[in-house]
Length: 371
Ligand code: NAD
Ligand code: AHE
Ligand code: ZN
Image 1 (cartoon, helix red, strand yellow):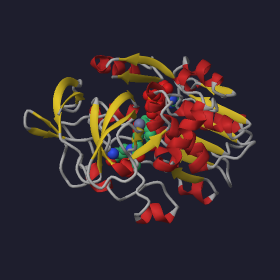
Image 2: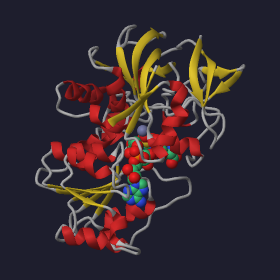
Image 3: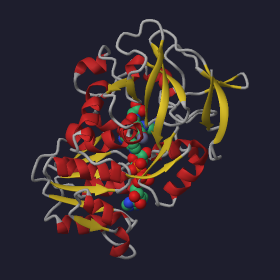
Image 4: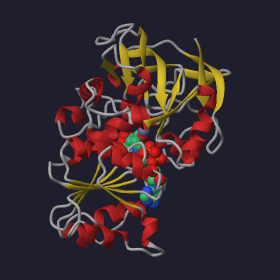
């Protein structure tokens, strides 16, 4: 069938709106009509060429919501008409990782997903007879896409697509990192580096669990107001510390020795080190969420770890997609979490490049494309 998509033909070039061809769902696969998709910083990062797994041409987008149109042979848990959220972290419930109960990183289709292909090693998308890669197993920058059944969370039918699409990445990543990965306790002091689409959800999660102090760090002063609305208690702009300002020293001072939990939500390796080093000696836990570019590495003095700080990471907030995503949709529908105030812009697919430009200029928290 013909579908409308924003295609990434080359790293660093704007997306192009094209009619591409989509093949029918095969064994274990599902055809989904995407109704809405968010723009995540990770899409921009891959388009920039910084992603070692970036492939071109590809249809990016991984933060969607939509409706099942057709199921391929062997699909057991979904039927046409079901409302779904695509999962870039699937949940097969059968692989070693799923059965371990120690991680959400299902490994059943990770290798083909990383190659931009469906589990049988082929692509369903093509343009002028040439294959186009899938992206993170989702490709939500197309109004129809095909996914494996294990990469779809079935959600309640009354949830609005233009809001709950954000649960497909940013909301779950931020709140989940607090609840599932770091397991922040009530009364904790939390520091969040980067107050964008992810960091504000970390703040929202920290407030949910009853953190006492929630300190936000961002270079963009405009982030203070919205972060306070979501539960931030103090704001630090590193630029206010002056040239060569000691961010780590400042945070250690205002927290009386360091934070119980810190979260890096930018993808900056210098900030990752600073986030670790302002975690409290003896017990502080620093969680890396931000995605750094190809070739970048993190470093610190091993003494930072010897003296009891822990450095951990979180993908998709440690959430098990098919199990946890429907629950997070319920939290939204029960007004237990706020998504509406984080969706600052809504655009048609044709304006997607402007959406990324606004993200670069720091003008948006989340932009949603509605088909
Ligand atoms: P965003 O662009 O919305 O927000 C980034 C924020 O960081 C902005 O507010 C910006 O002003 C701030 N910032 C930039 N440089 C800074 C610095 N040096 N010090 C302090 N603040 C700084 O991005 P986002 O969508 O929130 O994504 C954040 C990061 O998380 C990206 O690297 C993204 O790829 C990654 N991510 C990871 C996962 C995961 O599962 N681990 C999921 C989604 C996104
Ligand atoms: N492909 C990159 C890494 C990208 C990355 O870390 N992706 C996160 C999700 S970001 C969503 O916005 C993730 O879940 N990673 C786990 C995984 O298995 O991909 C690289 O460096 O190669
Ligand atoms: Zn994302």
